[in-house]
Length: 106
Image 1: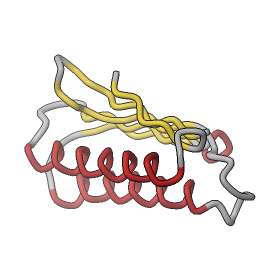
Image 2: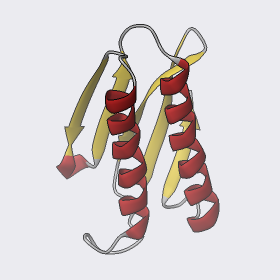
Image 3: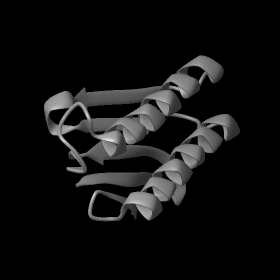
Image 4: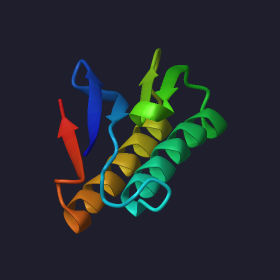
């Protein structure tokens, strides 16, 4: 299962941590993993391209891990990109089931 954790600082969203493989299908054919990956990478790329916000990012493909955190001021645009990512993950969770992906709001 893939877990997507909403990161917060002082009750404000400031990033996410994604880890695990959904197990929906074999590696290379898993549409749940592919959809989550596409949303997450697009979110990071959008923040990098369309804002001047500073962030740290780390990944480990073997573990299916992507960790992203805004490190300074959080613009409205970055907050919107992050909320959009979480909306997409929530819809994937509703469509395919929480046995494959789970959005955790901590």
